[in-house]
Length: 80
Image (cartoon, rainbow, N blue to C red; front, side):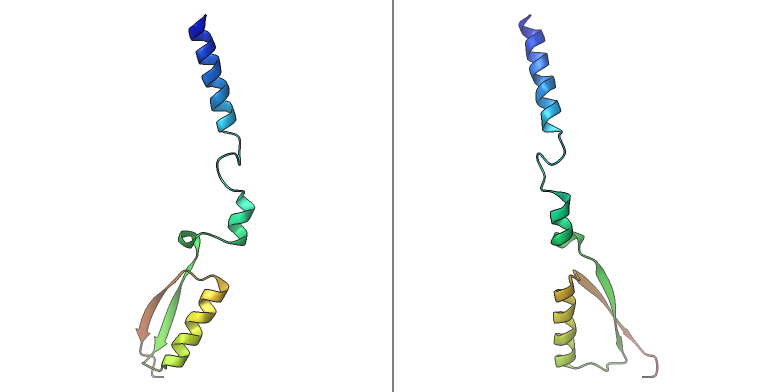
């Protein structure tokens, strides 16, 4: 009889521990402020070296402000 009560207790414990939202924050909160590993990356093309320190700083600040998590920089020569 005692072992049946233990099994019943464990079953009830498992049921309550799997209730959505009981162990993790609400999904809505992740949309408001996504974790760093969920933020998107973007391609950032630098055309033939036509860049400035001020332009790079402005671009990075803008990307951070809108939630870009990282960049993949490509130096390209398009005759610019």
